[in-house]
Every structure is written in structure tokens, then in C-alpha cells.
Image 1: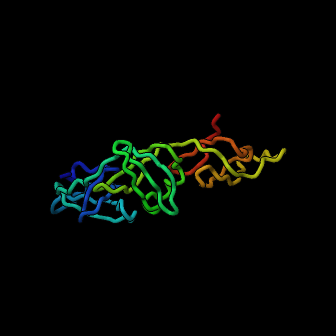
Image 2: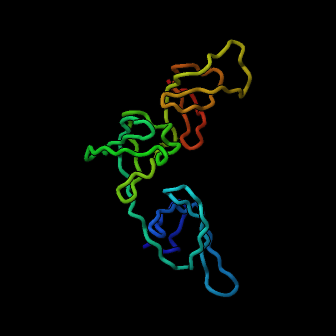
Image 3: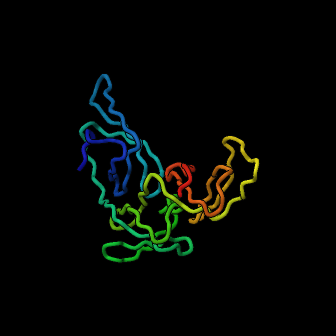
Length: 186
């Protein structure tokens, strides 16, 4: 059980058998009556954000969650096939559950998977990844406009905007939270 005094952004709690992530919270003490805590919670299964109020000192369930190192094997239509690196068991996870993070998963690479009751509900990625540019328009001599960008398709199928000097077969560093170009890698 988790008490409201332990609430902090990023803490995972369970309400009505559903896992929630605390986005923000605020302790509130009205002039009369007991104190309470206002929270903004994100449902980790649907992504929906709700507002919930708890009495101060109230206890909520801790979800049955774990992180496990899993290897991305391949994409099977609209699903991702992951392998548990301890038991070598394979799991097929629908693309809706992986979400936007699927554009950063490279075949054969390992990442941490977030599991709830033994089912994958998301992937934890590093802050940035290095990916190969597979398709982009070539840079033309004289394209020196400061801050100009062009679309580039990366090896995972993700499309991001890159500066004009980036060419095919360049390796680029991409921020996994904002999908922004961070720089070229050697």
C-alpha cells in the first residue's frame, strides 16, 4: 500500500485494478475540514488522463509491475515480437501498446519492457538513440540556410526532420522523447 504522503510525479499506483502514473499532485488544506491531495493521473493502459482527489493519509494499492530486459526480434505486421532474455520466451505485443516508442526499436537490440501482471504495457527507452538514415533528399551545394531542415527516413521507418547537410547512410542521434535530431554520429 502507498500513502498519499508518498506521492510524487512518476510514481505508479493502482486504482480499480488499473495502473496509473502520477503526472502531478498538490497537497491542499482548506480552511475547514481535513486536508486532501489533488492528482492528475495517466492510465498506463489507455493513455487517458484523469483528475482524482484523495483524503490526506489515504492508502492506495501498488500495482504488480516489473521491468524486464527484452530483445526486439522483428515486426510481424502490426505487432512487435519481443524475447525475454532470461527465459527466451517470445511475446507478441500489439503496436498500439508499444506506441510511438516502436519507431526507435532496432531489430536485435535490447531495451527494458514495462510489465503489468505479466503483460507488456510499454517500453523504457534511453534518452537518445543512434539510427541510420535510409532515405532523404541529397544536400545541394549552396543550401546553407541557417536552421533549414528536410525529412529523413530512418532504418526503423521513423521519419524525422534533419538539417540539410545530412545525407543517406549517415548515422544520426535522435531524442526519444521529442523525436528531435541531436547530431550526427561517426
